[in-house]
Image 1 (tube, rainbow over the protein chains, first blue to last red):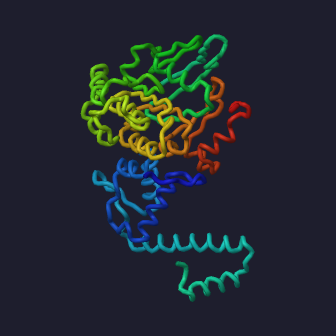
Image 2 (tube, rainbow over the protein chains, first blue to last red):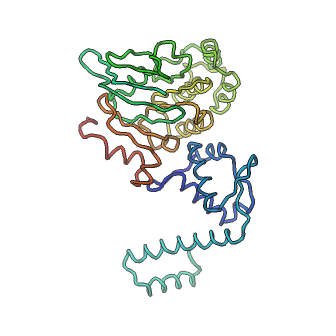
Image 3 (cartoon, chains in turn purple, yellow):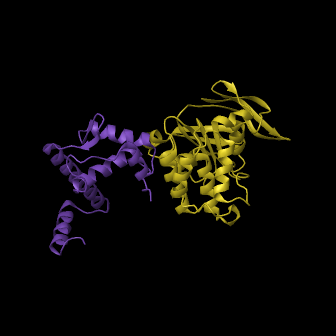
Length: 124
Length: 234
């Protein structure tokens, strides 16, 4: 099945996000070869031009490297991997805090509820 | 390049196309959206050389379109493509006999992809299988232009998904100019580059799909809803 895409974001950047997430989760390893543009397009059910843009964007960010005639590979640079990890964490935390504030919780209450939740075995 | 220059097609009193002007660039994938009766199929037939404009011109690479254009153009039409008494393999043979650019190898590949049984008769095929067979027949050809008129009509979500996958796998992106008319925009959106809105025989809006998401945060369906004129859907 091709994956669903959110409406609010360009498809190329959603696929880029997905690759970064897979990398951070360890489903993609440092130095691992990514599928070719065409394969990736078929897997995701999107126009190959979109994937071209995804890979271009990831390369610009230093997440992947394109080796001429060989393909596109995930970065092996440690600092880049660390940065991606913290970036994603920050993103999730920011979104969480924003949501909690929207339903009217104070920072203290947010703190408290996270603490309680973790103490009680965390979110399952 | 496909150029429609002030094209009007009149059936009796009704103008199916009304002074339509647009240029389709080579190697791009276009989606034509619009309510029923807005002229989508007429436009496709005009490009395929099956309908002659009452006024205006249709040019492909600068040459006026004629019946001979079929040599370099594959057209999936909503009706009249399949012969009921034929078996799947006979349909394939028939297309092979009619079009020099029809690739038997590609047809075999597509047969497996579409999970069709070559021995089955067209009359025994479900709607979904017929839809897949039609697509097989046009995708097995090597043409500069591919016209798909309502490839999803009447098909369930699973089949629609297979069709999108087959399009990504078998379209020659960057080389083939692909024009798809559809109402099932959500399925097809990830492969489109440009979307056009056709209303009452005219193109009333057009957009670059990724640009609309990036700049307006809209999917094509949402874009369509903000652009379609009230009353046109009646």
